[in-house]
Picture 1 (cartoon, each protein chain N blue to C red):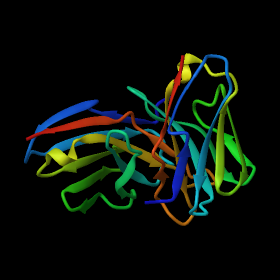
Picture 2: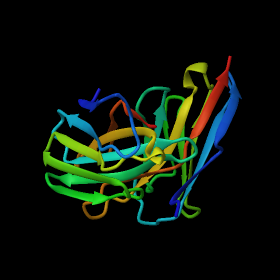
Picture 3: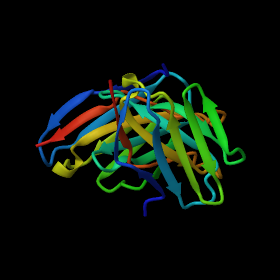
Length: 114
Length: 112
């Protein structure tokens, strides 16, 4: 059972364009939704995160949009740059109990062409 | 960078041999996790720990065992390695007071 579904699997964008990656979840107990960025040969690193009590969070060129009723959230990268080329993972966590574990989407390979 | 060290970083082993991967942290974080990363599957949780000697299974735990005898160390053991366990393994840590999980650099394991 895949609890977090991510699309697209890969994405090619021109420099200066907008990159959009979408995720959907099933478990309504999830209460924390981070996005991780991973460069080749490195471990994933937290990029930006949101809680379900807000509909949008912006940090620089990166924005998370969150739709609680639809159980969907998305990452928007404005003015995409070649340095943004990486794999992006959405994730969700249920903070209830002692479990503090993240469930990840399958990832999106973003390529930004110069 | 969070103080997480995975060892070894690369390993090639033969089918049927036991393999142990080590994750060492210097952050004194309560939670530690082992994930595997495979093309098309993203990051999948193998096992996790919520304290010394407190561990639980993740979604792909078959063929793996873990141990945590000290706060700073979390060991992942493949009792009898199979080719399907060829993967990149990541350790992660987090703390109850923080929402962020920090990942190590990964261990690339090849089972031949």
